[in-house]
Length: 262
Ligand code: TMP
Image: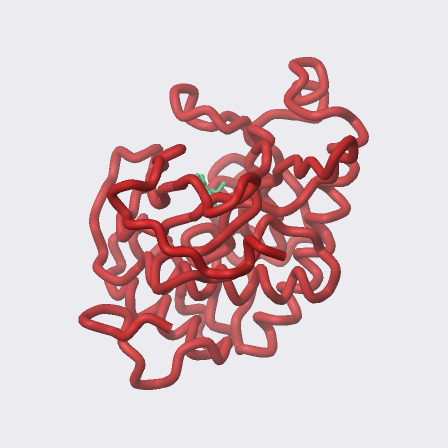
């Protein structure tokens, strides 16, 4: 496949397709591909809180690459093709479904606030929630009724999304457990991938400590973006620890500074 061969386009000449809070999408080297660039920006509470944390993008690129590669290998379809460099990966262009799909195993975050459940409570079973991706509205929680009535996704697509979310959860719970980490909850995004007349739903965006809650099994230490949301400090150290435990980054590999690409 031609698009798997590297072809370098200078940054300045690349067409920027979309800029989000933590990532930029550029036109890819072949039709149907995009380049996903991870920035160092950290935002929370719908970007009311913002900071730049040198090296976060590099870590998220690596961690997301690792998780998406594993998912591809177990037959969970994703948009991920391969990592290009420290901050960028080649992905398939998909039509993003405007939903944030949250899977929860343990009570934390908005669930504890909304329902008064104590943080850390193991949930009776995994819970899937849908949020409508709309910054102006602050990503409100929505039901399947809203999703189908307003045409954001068809009933069959919701079924596919839920089945994939459960597979991703089952796989990642085990993967992180092996690294001494409890997967408390996480957010997924999905896209429609067109292959001729056929369309399938694939996992898109990123899976990283920005989009997951990850607690150390023994100490319950937070190894995710809650370190930023709750001003706990040590975000880079926590993300580095996640990467190290997953076997992605060696002990003394540093995410910042002049590091040789690949
Ligand atoms: P929540 O408890 O704030 O609803 O978050 C649930 C999970 O979703 C948590 O792992 C963080 C992730 N998340 C995002 O990735 N993006 C977001 O905008 C929000 C609100 C949560």
